[in-house]
Length: 135
Image (cartoon, rainbow, N blue to C red):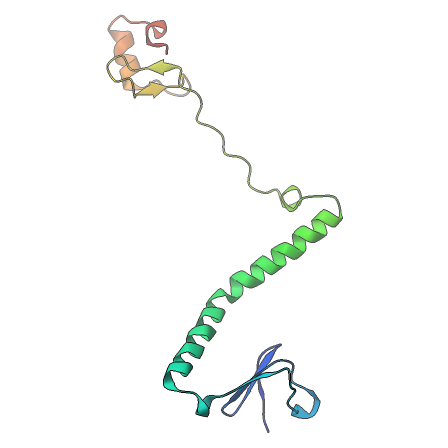
């Protein structure tokens, strides 16, 4: 009888799906879960297909998580964090604390860094100083 491997722990033969390790000589074991597709109702078949589809869809992410956990464990055993070894994401730089406020719109502010906003240029052109705009 020919067997087709689905994964390390499942295999299929004709209309039977067997979960568990395929024993030597293709003998069935008590701890293996068996499904005879011919004996299943349409609802059971659809539920099984849904489970298989979900498992397939999440396979890559589960493998990625497993690999990540193994790498983190190995790094920890060597006295490092994984981020230290791979140069993980650095903390994002803050945009800064506002230092100046628009005279007419208190919600509009400027940190004093970078190009001057138009409202600061207009205030300076109208005779105000940066000290007048300080928060």
